[in-house]
Length: 137
Ligand SMILES: Cc1cc2nc3c(=O)[nH]c(=O)nc-3n(C[C@H](O)[C@H](O)[C@H](O)COP(=O)(O)O)c2cc1C
Image (spheres, rainbow, N blue to C red):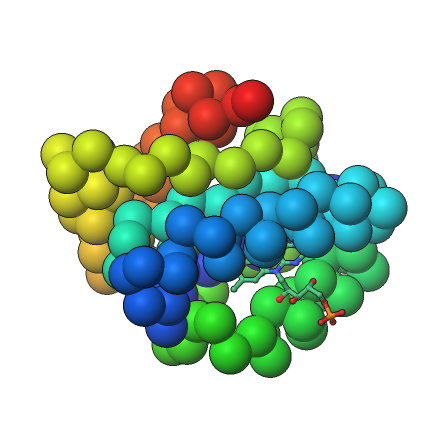
């Protein structure tokens, strides 16, 4: 089991963002499943956080596509490598047009995860877990 956890800055403009994120998820469900990869995507309106886990080759293939994707920029890895267990059993998306509070909480967690070490990375992963339960359709 391998994981890649990153934060990036959205390049989407407000009025198209919902639709584009839906497109991303639709493509991702099929492709991630085919590669045996699970995970979660959080979109705060400004930033993305995404946790991907699965066989190293699958995660790496996705990583290559995602890193070339012009819909976001400034991709920063906050955790990567071997990991003991799967955290997300199904691919789901934590995208609900987020209430303001949720969005600012998410932004705080993103900043902490980037700058303040491993405990905050795990806190962000846990937040994604909680969000995906709510976001599961
Ligand atoms: C923030 C973000 C997250 C993405 N996550 C995934 C993903 O988990 N799985 C996936 O197949 N594509 C994901 N994509 C889309 C890929 O970058 C890519 O467009 C898609 O996989 C099609 O790949 P291809 O252009 O190499 O054919 C994501 C894109 C963005 C901007």
